Image (cartoon, rainbow, N blue to C red):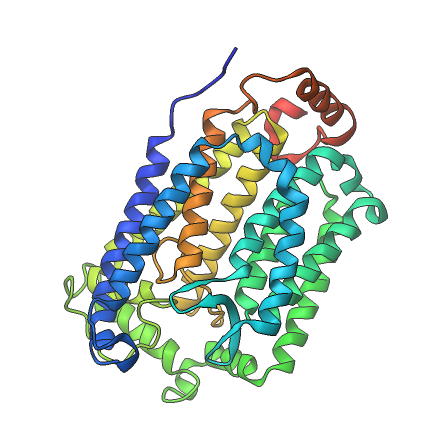
Length: 398
């Protein structure tokens, strides 16, 4: 029998509200800069028009993800991971350079960031591997170290763009999936300790990263230099007060706050909508993350459960990093706010992820009509691969 649950409308509404808020504030935050920049053609709606285009593409991606048989994506997992690694290498060689970094491939407005595709590819690969070979993840040499090595390769390639923030999101998502997939805690602690050491080395090797740490620790030490962005972000948030200065009435977008429509768009929201508006955005992110993990917990199909947990972790980690930077809880990392910050690759990937989450919630048992081959595969997965002690699976797999 076909087991199909009702569509998770609440998750779609939350995602739609975040995207709509992003479109509104991208225009609100960028029209001053766009209207006076030569590269935009002095068009105040330059960034708005592009984001609307990408929102349309993202809507198509969401619709496709909702309708495709997600349980068949495991067949593409290995190939997708290989393609992602090749693209990450290619962007270092022939990528488009902007502000001293090579993060995109393509031409003109038709660009995409391989690091965004790598996020999805890694989630699919780890979900497929843990479903098929899950018990090996508890063995250091047979399973855990090879997967940790993969995380290291992907993380280093992204860091070399350089994009340490996205590298942290990708590796953090992978670590979360290993934890939920049943990896031993002591192995995870070893990996986290090694990762922290690597991050410290990367910070030491790049002087501008060390300057960011200094600006984070003492923003007022150099308010016109390295701390300029942090200081004006805090000024924007503080100026907003409880209810904000009013939609469109913010002052920091008048060439005071850099990246006002990208990484620091939450500062613009906080200035104009105040603490109440900012908390509203945070609650929407919290709801999306919790619904995603709830879908993972209630999904009986191991592959779907792991994909849902990985996508939820990815969105949550990226949001936490961005919010932490904007409020100066964390040093600057250059990570955009999911759904809201200006940028096509991130928006399309995040909306595709939403479509997959809704899809998985509708088919918690996986394939609606299992073939004989599918049933045999699932039996092998349950008996030899998927670890019934995995943390993501709830009481169903204990």
